[in-house]
Length: 102
Image (cartoon, rainbow, N blue to C red; front, side):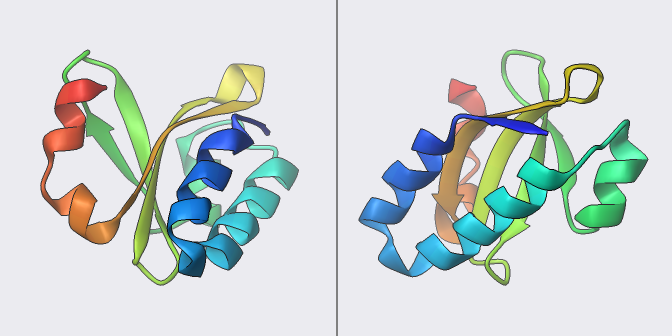
């Protein structure tokens, strides 16, 4: 899958240094993946969830780094693309405010 954009991951780990290794690992797995559908993706990331946000878009929430971080992305299987929308800590994610801005 083509990850768009790695920049969001880097910006997050620059402010949260402890997340860098986990986010780099997540990126490598996703970059090498060839998912055709939700079932393929769930086989790789069994703890991922689908979440509908304010824009009525359904996004995938990946648990990263032992559940310490979340990567929220739009996965377009037919195009082989994963659009990273937001990266946050578990605490930020739990507040649910992020859903309103996506």
